[in-house]
Amino acid sequence: MNIYSFTKNELENYLIENEFKKFNATQILEWVYLKNIKSFDEMRNVSKVLIEFCKTNFTMETLKLITKHSSKDTVKYLFELTDGNKIECVLMKHNYGNSLCISSQVGCNMGCVFCESGRLKKVRDLSLEELVLQVISVKKEENININSIVIMGIGEPFDNFENIKRFLSVAIDPKMIGIGQRHITVSTCGLVPKIKEFADLDTQVNLAISLHAPNNEIRNQIMKINSAYNINSVMSAVDYYIEKTNRRVTIEYIMLDDINDSEKCAKELVSLLKGKLVYVNLIPYNETSNCQIKRSKDFKVKAFYDILKKNGIECTIRKEMGLKVSAACGQLRALSEVK
Ligand code: SF4
Image 1 (cartoon, helix red, strand yellow):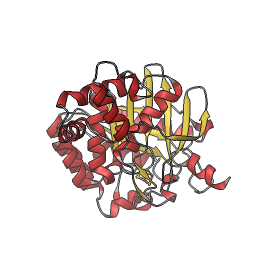
Image 2 (tube, helix red, strand yellow; image 1 turned 180 degrees about the vertical axis):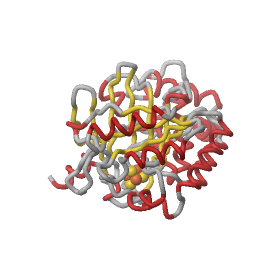
Image 3 (spheres, protein in one colour; image 1 turned 60 degrees about the vertical axis):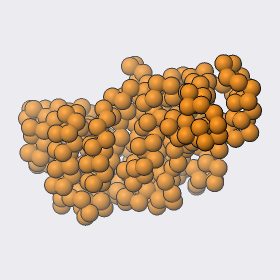
Image 4 (spheres, helix red, strand yellow; image 1 turned 30 degrees about the vertical axis):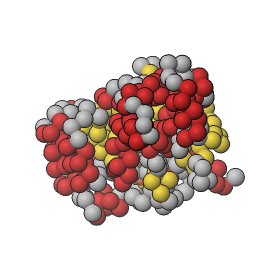
């Protein structure tokens, strides 16, 4: 078993079952996560018996790095999992810290038409270990701290809800990955029951909704999930989340040429969001050769932004990062397949 496959509680229980003490879990995790040891032999304040137990029962392997593409502010990694599947994650170096976007599944079943990742149907969910190891592997590869995490890479996180919950407990634990809850964001395409379950967890972790359209007609064309959970049901789940947590929700809106970028769309989006505790992130689209959809022209993005702003909707245009490193979700894996 990989030591990164346990939550703290799970490791405590495992050690207790094996006649160790609960506090031994914290000791091991401190060495592994905070002191970055490469071998259990390096642990100092623990008994020889515990060191031998760890060496016999646990490994601490990281992910196998296949490719790394870098630009000034972005590094994109392609990792191979032990079963040969590949996943991507992207490091973004902002002036306020390092942010890592991680994947939650191998492939994705949600079928958004503009998405490169969705071209590979879901093969399986990522395990806790594979979620955690994206963070650990990048930290070790670059010798840096990660200041924030977004779960927005390949896959739909809420379609892997149990492991995402376990991952969050590892990510926020100060003796483990140790990132403040408010610096972690989970993004969903709108799995309504899970949005409500997420709200009920009562955490400070941020929620982002991939809305991408102001009405059902457009959303049906570009996001298959809308036939199961339409805009009204997504927005009432957002209301539920805000009421429960009093946290602002990010609305992701990818700007697609002549699809969702008209003035009319902007005004409809205003009506949909007016008065809600939300913030809109307008995302310039990364075109791919596998999809006919084009990115919105800059002047249309600006006009869309102005309409939202003028009507009191908090809004930004996402700074473009990673264009030169094939950082559109799924592009690096796709490139590795055609090579
Ligand atoms: S945008 Fe997200 S949810 Fe939609 S297909 Fe791509 S990875 Fe899946």
